[in-house]
Length: 251
Ligand code: PEP
Image (tube, rainbow, N blue to C red; front, side, top):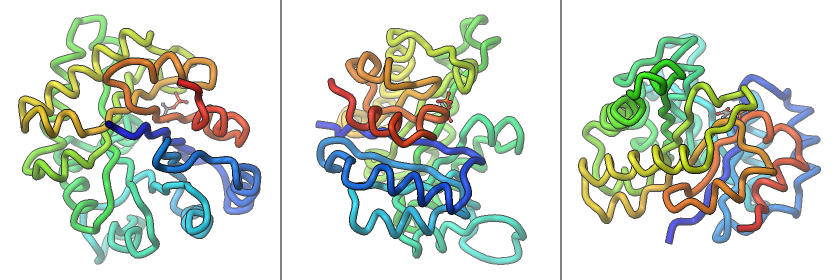
């Protein structure tokens, strides 16, 4: 049985004061983590507030990125070791915005996944196709390739505990959601890819999220699909009421 995991991705939004106000608004209203794991991925400057809050509340915390070295002369980067020491649970890696604007490659993402495990956190690894790739019928092969490259040399145990997020780029921040059948089809491809690389047991354990204009109105329908175990949510995670509706979705 895979525990549903709904993660907000704030992107480059909210300062520490706004973070505090958001946390006050959701206090005491999150489901237990054994029912639904509620996660917030926030900018590095807001993570201290999140980790303090998570000591008393059923919130899991995520960084939106990290570097693949633990420390050193890498000005401006965020250390996975320091994130782990702060008490972070997850790090989102391979988000399409990082691939597109910061030219992150599959190889970088694989190195980051290893750094995250080395530091006792778990990765949320994103994949997804462009509209052109979808229209050219390349989606399944592209996504399978991204997953294969991201998981290179990871152990079965590591992969079983990972979260994989399928996010079609054309649906991110556009208001255009993939239909639940489209989302299910590609999430199934992701699970099949894990089964081929590892085995059915690992594929049965890994949790797969769909991301791309998820909102309170469509979360239940998406979550009803066999291979969709959660959502990675940008815009609709910014407002506390909307975030609460997402994590308290009725299946
Ligand atoms: C995201 O930030 O990963 C995302 C899917 O954004 P949105 O929900 O706004 O489409």
